[in-house]
Image (cartoon, rainbow over the protein chains, first blue to last red):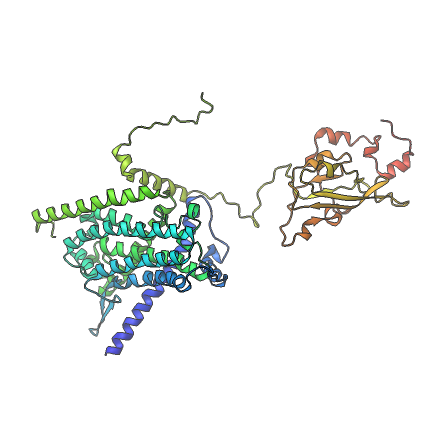
Length: 349
Length: 203
């Protein structure tokens, strides 16, 4: 019995791993296509029809490139940096519930979640804050001034924005009363989705998610135009690939998190009305498909913003983080508390 | 002073609250980029689709032959002197008896080389040439992996007798009119000259 559970969990874990890798892979293609469309271009269209084999070509190139470790770099830390980045990016989507548990006709239940930790939100936070070590260690071990500057920026940026992100989530947890992502999703079944209750919280969360993923307009750590490549200046071959790929996996994970926390996860409006025609499990599959749709929309949003907004200056970044987002998230927290205290029952908190 | 109608007066006024929030500005920017993503791309998919060339496009040079097929170049070296990139070198040789159908004048270029990596395609060689021997054409010089093969010799520059390169687009109507004047030695072939005798230069 234990072995069946283990095998089942291993399969789910493998599935999540594969899906996040494939989505991250095609995000690189999507990124280039979206950039092209926004700039009135065509984008990659040579490898296969519409260029859909482009990610394979890019990946193959990354593997075949010369591997170079600078002589003055700390060899082991140099290898450890991208490894941590990639590892952390992959394990953060463990707690996401992908679909409502399916009940088969013989009564057996299938859970579509690798692990239902009752402190899911805390787990995500812990994992995300390890992510900064990947960049920090890699950049420090490169022994290069550009890398060091990029590393400094990355670590201060990620630590600053984690605060506002955490506080905006605390307000969400107050309304839900649970740290488990399962509970947060199920609560959005009975009520509206959390975005209705926490619009300001969501805004802060999404801005901080952009910063945590080092995506434009917060891509100061790698800013090609000033720091060559920032923390990954000295990296070559698949170690560079790991850093770049980790960014896309992070994007997928944070999109999944945003969809789960604020937009009802696998729930969608009027799903109960669809049960008679589609059946319980049909609605669950549709829910999974719609969750993927939400995730892809958020990934699109990440790219759309990247190709629209120019990069922040470093002092503007710090001002925004400490002087705007942090006070706003505290205000959001206090307001949520006051409203909860006075309207108990009415808003179904 | 106003130089163009597009100039705008910049003001340093305090930003309004909406501007300080950035969010309306960001929404506006996102709307603009979204609008562009539905517009027709301006890309020319090069190997399949070729952009229209200007009628006086300056590409791969041609060394012309006259109507009878004799090379016009006399290796005077004016093109090499005019060349600002110093891309042209040549070696002159004297025409032997019986080679009149190959070379128009007593002197010809035995070796004529253009370094296509040095050439800036300015067209000054064409402008300097008194014999209408060198023209720039709308053929594109191929990219190559090797520097040595980018030095084009006569094999790549002189036009084939049975496959002439049309340069009429690069000549003004006045030039085209002048070329009809067969009394001028410049416009005569070696056969014309044989028929007319050697003292036919009226001009």
